[in-house]
Every structure is written in C-alpha cells, then in structure tokens.
Amino acid sequence: MTKYVSIIGNGESRRGFDISPLKDFSTVVGCNALYRDYMLEYVVCCDKHMCQEAANTVSKKTTIFTRANWFAQFQFWPNIKKLPDLPYNGDQRKDDPFHWGTGPYAGVVALTFKPKAIFMIGFDLYDRDKDVNN
Image 1 (cartoon, one colour):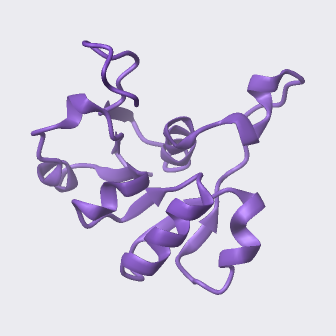
Image 2 (cartoon, one colour):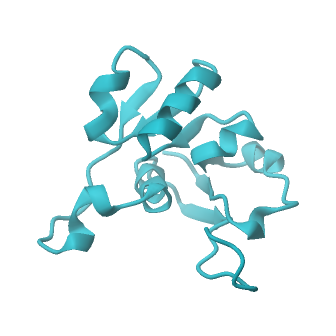
C-alpha cells in the first residue's frame, strides 16, 4: 500500500509548479509528455505515438502504461505494461475503455496502489482565456 499518490497532468495550471518535492512523500504518476521535464517512476500514455516516444526516451526504471490495443506493439519493452481494466462495466460510450483518456486512466493506475489519498495537479477542466486546448 502506498500512502499517497500524486497524478500530474499537463494543464496550464501546472506551469511553474515543481513536482520534484512530491516524490519525497508520494508515488508520482505522470501523464503523457511529462517525462520530458521530470524523471518519473510511472507514466500513462494512451496515445500510441506518445507511448512510442516515451519508450524511446525514458529509462527502464520508468514504467509506462498504455492501452491493451497498443500493447502487442510494445511487448518487447519490459517496462511497458497494459493499463488496468476499468473498475466497472457499462454499456454507454463513456464506459468504453477506448474513450477514456490519459488523465482518467492515470487515476485508475493510482487506485492500484491503494493509497490513503490521491492528489491531482495540472488537470484543467476549462481554460481561463479560451486560448488553451488541454
């Protein structure tokens, strides 16, 4: 059991926030290209091309989670794992795992650690000036 997990998104609200101290007290799960800025233990990449870029860039100490659909392409990388199954079943579009993005899946990965608390940084639900696409 991990006491705390910090999930880091790529939203504008993360700009200027140094996530390094979070590693002192939590397991850090990063989304997509966050590995370009920080050494991470865990990265979630739902996009096939982002997963390929991460696989070619990060060290073998970084675990990369990707969709089951892409896993066969990356099965020879020992540090690439399939994303966990969703914690529920449903029959609507929103219940189809393929329609889940990296951020929500990072939450599912965080839950696998059975933490006491999960902190989320850089998940902007809307933009402030209509110029940000996140």
